[in-house]
Length: 419
View 1: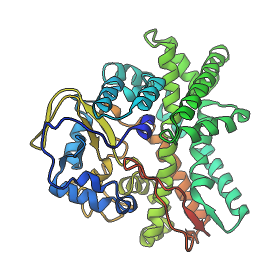
View 2 (view 1 turned 135 degrees about the horizontal axis):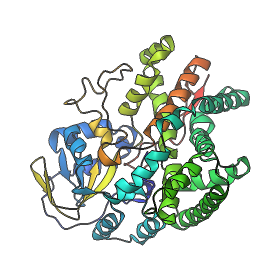
View 3 (view 1 turned 120 degrees about the vertical axis):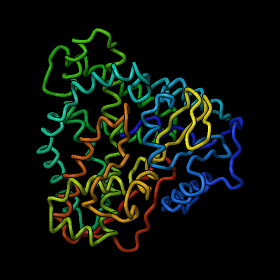
View 4 (view 1 turned 45 degrees about the horizontal axis):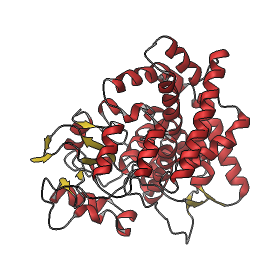
């Protein structure tokens, strides 16, 4: 699960040079078509040649596991919305759109630092419990079975993203938050808009405003008539903590509902693709379904949708012998750390029973992904059910795969399959 504003964050700009970049800017390679198809050889080169890399645009790229793991817990690397906005302004160019979007999203817990982050996170932790997530398992199974039934009935081929991976997390979130059936098509439309924040900032702002108004109405209704849903649990938690404002409650609902949608979709898509490209591992899972939990972690490690997350330097910090200055942006490449041979044996090999698989796909430290267990539950149910029910599943012939262009994310536009 990632910060919703990552879609809108620029990937280039200008900044004053506090440190000289190498003669060849390895960061520029990540914007190529070749890197879009397979970024992992480029990460390997960056880890070898310039693991703490300052790009020609003045942005730092961290690719080693040890550096990124430490950085995720280092409060000198900030996720604060205001600091982030100032850092992007310092890059130059027209960044009004990003600033407007940032203002609309408000101070959600993913965009704050301690102590405010800890206070908001505590609220969410009280309501978003492991028991509540596990209680969704039967419902997730019913949704997955229905989506597969519909896909099979439609014909011998399907786009897994459109048919299963995209509608699943939205349906699960609607169940979790008690969103009425009649409202779900409209909510789906807003979700679709959130997944394309950088394409049209005006439409994105309008969708966010409409969604916030809708959530406000739900919060008010649950205050009057509480139920067994997560919004009711959050409202009850707010009543126990008068430091939490209505705006913060609304922002917490917003981020919990939206932030994991695209990530879960593409964990399923990337994971199924990895299995189909590694038939030996797919056969292992078919023969031993109990591998599914370790398989989900390995699939998340192997090709995570969240390739990198963004931080801004709040106080000068030395990493890998280089000094990162206050106000500079830092990209923490989680995907590169997950293939670091200093941390993982034979890291480019998919191994569904990999021991000690402490990947960083869900982050680490104070911003460790709150929705990680829910995302993993959905991937577990979706992948195990696909493997069990569609044993002849394979990539559709003659269909080229297209990856979306954002180098901070790894998301398929479609995954055509036949069965």
